[in-house]
Amino acid sequence: MDKSKFIKVAKSDLRNFARVKPDGYYEDVVANAEYENDSIVALTQEKFAALREKYAGKVVDRAEQRSAKPMRKRLTPWQILKGATGLLQDALNIGIVDDETYIERKQTCLNCPDDLYDFGVCGGSGCQCYLAAKIRIKDQSCPKGHWAKA
Image 1 (tube, rainbow, N blue to C red):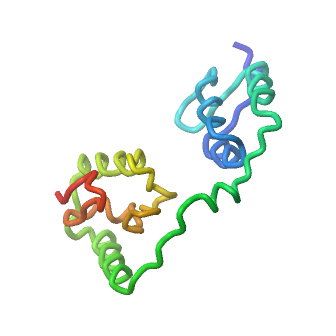
Image 2 (image 1 turned 30 degrees about the vertical axis):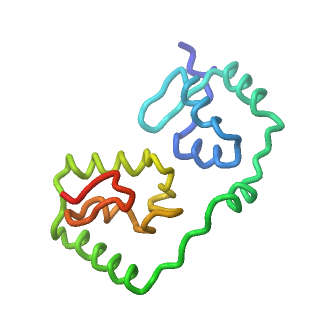
Image 3 (image 1 turned 135 degrees about the horizontal axis):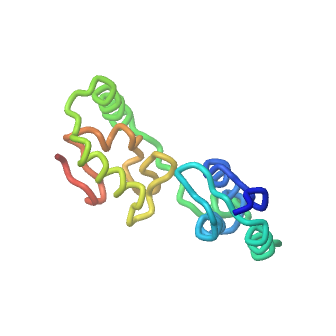
């Protein structure tokens, strides 16, 4: 396999670039990758050219998409206090779930059936919590009922 005929891109860079591309672009690139590991995607130059042609001229107006999304709710002082205690619990490892529960909760949030996950926050009509801490705490639960207290 002649590696000089491949275009290699770090997945993190690809995700950032895909934000200005139409929906499905990232998935298309990964699906057409000849070589893939946890951090690098490699496409043959031919496949890259075909994908470029497929998505050419399909400009995405992200400002329009953002305005279509519901605005985040303002947090109440109670929510801020509750969140601060949760962050403190997480930092001090007090009342933390086991690794298996943590992974299950994380996967549920990442693949939220209500599409509330927004870059680490339960957005939209969700709880507005910082999920990296919330999913680790035993006495927390999903406001939409997708996972319960441990």
